[in-house]
Length: 89
Ligand code: SF4
Ligand code: SF4
Image 1 (cartoon, rainbow, N blue to C red):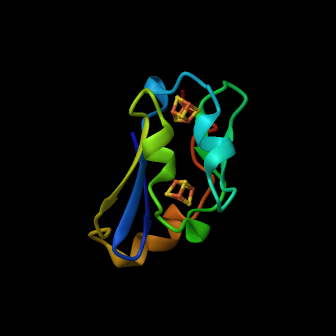
Image 2 (image 1 turned 135 degrees about the horizontal axis):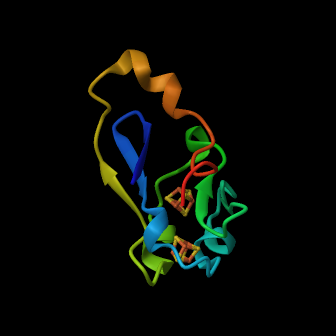
């Protein structure tokens, strides 16, 4: 599972659960989701997420969700503004 933080909010993705249907990708109003080379969900830029929850609502496999959480080490915040998911899944 990957957690991507932005302030007090977090986007969680669980690639093993993702079936690559693309519903969340086409529904995201911020256009930050994509399917990687293994057809698994990945995030381009978490700083542009508006935490609307549409991806969570559309996913039939509970592979992406939003929740309130702040990273415990603020100094590592920048490390989470990255493309995730390319090396996993
Ligand atoms: S919470 Fe909204 S903006 Fe963020 S990834 Fe999901 S659909 Fe896109
Ligand atoms: S809606 Fe769910 S299963 Fe479909 S691509 Fe998005 S995360 Fe994967």
